[in-house]
Length: 325
Image 1 (cartoon, rainbow, N blue to C red):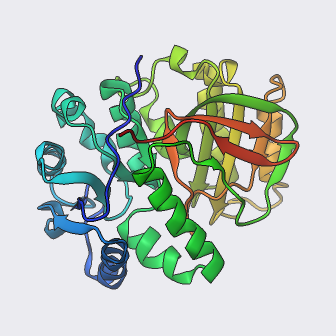
Image 2 (image 1 turned 45 degrees about the vertical axis):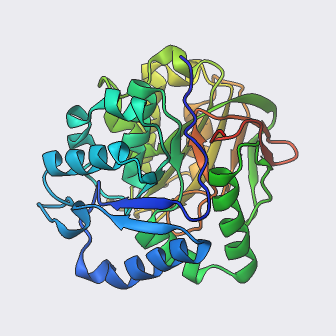
């Protein structure tokens, strides 16, 4: 598999905005405007697709409308990158409708996180395209960027530009919060990962990477709003599928809004105890507390790009660029 890094962005380029997951609801309008404002502050032009004005159940339009909007943005020569308004729940319904040949012929950054993991994995699998797991418009730029401490916001802005406009490795990314070593060790490999529930629901479909693509990978995940037994079940699913037999290391982002036990008298483990128990037969390093996930500013985690992780010194270094000249 030859990874396709899209052409770099230049200040002044046009970024297309689509709603490939949740619709752009009225309660998100303030965040949306703030997020669009951040893109314009950088000096980018913005072109809205059709889906930010559509609503179908819990999606920004029907699956067909969402697929058509995404494909139109990839085919539009004036649009140099695409960003989602938000995550959501519906990416998996769109994957069978995408034109992967057209996308492969017009590679460009497609940005977002959470449910956007589904698109990143599908485009990686079907078009060999780098997946840009990073902040989207509403909850990333429009909310978390606005709440971040000035130093954190400044670093996040710098990372956004570095990953998208510089065809050179981003190097070592300083932590914005405390990292935690769950298992010591060092590893070098390409990133594969995203939101844990989005990852696991794609297992067994044509839109999940072949198992041998996980050979030597640095697997990363984050989660929001689940019971601990949900997390256990999802990790076991990936384990039984054979993913953890092949990876070289693991990075864990934010795990937020964990639900309390449903039954009285249940003694639950910590997330680290749970994870290490499920993965006790392996010896790859695990570094947690990474700056990606929900309710935090997100460091870009481009799928397919090579990194070096050191759980002893708690560092992550990007060894390859995500974009090209």
